[in-house]
Image (cartoon, rainbow, N blue to C red; front, side, top):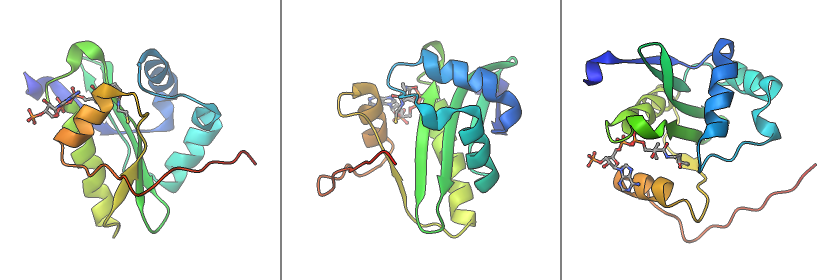
Length: 141
Ligand SMILES: CC(C)(COP(=O)(O)OP(=O)(O)OC[C@H]1O[C@@H](n2cnc3c(N)ncnc32)[C@H](O)[C@@H]1OP(=O)(O)O)[C@@H](O)C(=O)NCCC(=O)NCCS
């Protein structure tokens, strides 16, 4: 039944429903970096590598992906619980990476909460390397 799925580039026009979906999903950390202004700026800088998935006009999956000229970064990969297990997450990732490649980016990173079992299981299964040689440092400025 995957031929009923519609994958589209993410645009700011759909921000409201995308934001509502992110807020509804366990494992997705929504922050001030997800304000409409911030996402609009992100999509202006990275117009082609973020995607949404619809089925029967209902938003069921997203991936936010971009690069800084050197490396790619993925955020907010999610699929509504009742639509999981149909390769939607994997397809979103493939589409995003395809676009990064076209833009000359050959490596991508992502962040997953330590205790997000679903997320960590997924990334392991779809061929990503878990780094044990790095820590994330952050600072509010
Ligand atoms: C992670 C998530 C996006 C996966 O979406 P999905 O559409 O169900 O995943 P897919 O159907 O594309 O799965 C692709 C492959 O990964 C496997 N997989 C998916 N979730 C898995 C898990 N938790 N543990 C192990 N394998 C998993 C699938 O079995 C499939 O394997 P196959 O190709 O061998 O059949 C979804 O579970 C989700 O939205 N989780 C909550 C949000 C989240 O934590 N996102 C990641 C944060 S960075």
